Length: 114
Length: 112
Image (cartoon, rainbow over all chains, first blue to last red; front, top):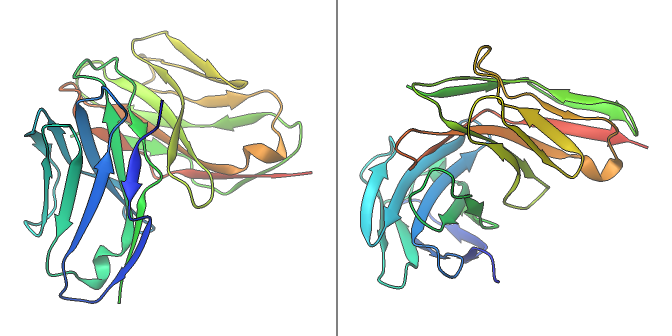
């Protein structure tokens, strides 16, 4: 079974631009969540989606948004990019909402803002 | 709110040495606890988990026991290998089961 797939793996954007990152969860997984990893702030929760509904959102500005499609694939968007948005963005998926469900992570998308 | 504290690294060990990485947490209720490992340039891989008090998670020679009385989930391995060199993250899942809170990560370096 394929793992969590994130695209693109690496990208460079300019300040003020916007970016869209994509995540395909493990087949059969309906929950998708996103995390930001930076050297200064560590791993921080962005949001979680289940059945196309956002269930929880972390403490990030409104420039960060996401959505989930009917096939459970998810995208996150960051508008008006700032230098501080440079980070590894990790997507994770799990089968359902049971807290015993294992959460699996993708390889991440490395975003550099210049 | 929930928080996870783990020992700062780097931790440098010789091959076959004993490893302990301390992790303590603050949370309401009884969260599930996890250890994830991140190799250079890669995402997070689940190493082990425990979902209730006194549970012991184990995988690839690593172990951690969920200690409610000390709110701890320390990671141990009896004999580390060079291939264990990575960053290790302790994490807890909130009661709603929709958000992981991570510790700051501990870099482990194992020398031959």
